[in-house]
Image (cartoon, rainbow, N blue to C red; front, side, top):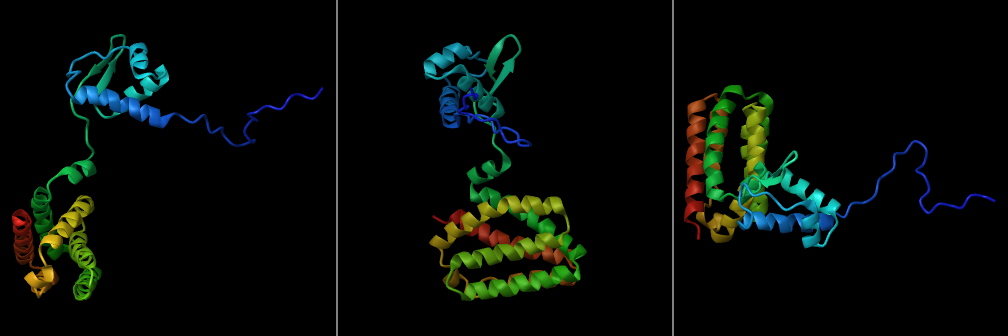
Length: 246
């Protein structure tokens, strides 16, 4: 008699098995319930959590789901397992990665840090710029001019940020460039919000072109002091607008 066919045939030769799907939504729900207990203060820092069996019963899930949920909380820095003693609460708030913290920060606070970065970046750009950097800056200024003449405020903001990004790139410091890149999404959102409150075309018919052209000239002529001063003045004006926008 031929062997009965299995409902789960073996994987093809040379291919590793995928493994069973995990009930991720259930794990997320369990993790959120436990997280709520911690962040609400029901389980203060130092508290030993109930055992897996008790948590599974209270949540109406299996122990494996509880185990995965606890791993999620441990990854967020909320709990820690102590061998032979149990799982303890070690923090009342989850850890945040840098991008998440930036998204939560006030745009004016982010702008203050942007000023610190860009002033130094402009100074370094004036010292280190190459011919390719200068060509990129000239092209970015032309693109900014074109975007201002167009109908979309978003395109102008993107072009303005692209010019500033080109200045940072000309500093030839990869860490500085990476840091600025982290700020860009928050800066863009803040400038878009400002644009809904202030008509940039009506408030500045020259759209700050003179300042940006002067910045590029300072970079081109290798004048770090002038480059830093120009970018500081320009960003201070925008920061003031952000702080007073209602």
